[in-house]
Length: 71
Image (cartoon, rainbow, N blue to C red):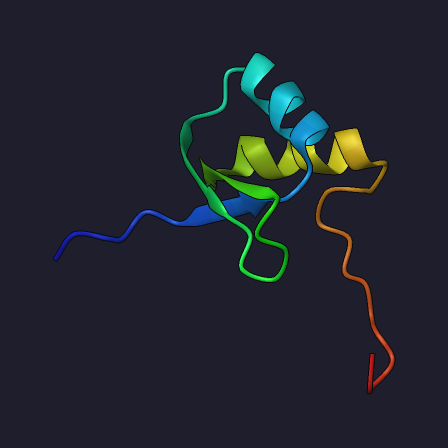
């Protein structure tokens, strides 16, 4: 059985542009359900994409954040 491709949703246009410039596989756009005047950008989720996302957002790749309950 074939594995389904994982999709990563990007909500920020400037982040979309940076990821597209780095050559990541952009799939399609769709309207943001909560704020219809904005677009969501869909990329194929890969380890390289996750590493670049961490680098561009100032996080450490593989870092696990613990959130308080109720947030």
